[in-house]
Image (cartoon, rainbow, N blue to C red; front, side, top):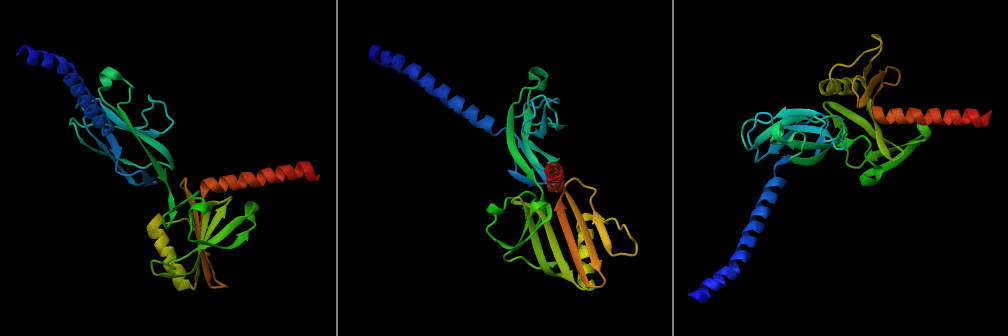
Length: 270
């Protein structure tokens, strides 16, 4: 009996250490699952579902969405957590960029101490699941067709297998523009007033009613947002219509490029 008792005493510390290790692993695993998003990448304006777990149920605990580089005391877009341990909160995807979801449990006691965080990105799918700024090197289905000399050169491509139809409009072509290797614009060409009207109607359904600067011209403009500008017009003489969509941010860079070149030319050329 003494021998058995002695053996138990010898292995007891080992058993305790094993139990502690298992408990640590369980807690660590649970912590990793405290907050998460339903996707890693969202389109601008899309609904973000944030799943939380192991919440203590305090009425002042909260979850927020902030730019990834923000300090931990930045509240950003936040919502209080319902008084339950597990659940889902929804947010609207902000402007394109890299973000974090941050959970603050036991906020009354801990203050701005982040309990858990999870990263995600927001892009803007400008056209057919292509985000502005997408690098041409990542697109294997593009075929080069020429270069527009604007802004030092915008290379144009067509996309293999593109469906040349939008709504009831039969399209002549879809041209993708890349400036300095980044997706910056798209030009859609149609022939005939019937196709132009169908394309215009589909654009209005997608983006709302645009401005018509001249009541005597079939020309409509969308540009109140912070992501894209859209221009659609019809030429009565050629019987052709065009929709041109471009990135506002990249267009700002293009204009700065032209200003820089003009400034350098004024200094060196005169």
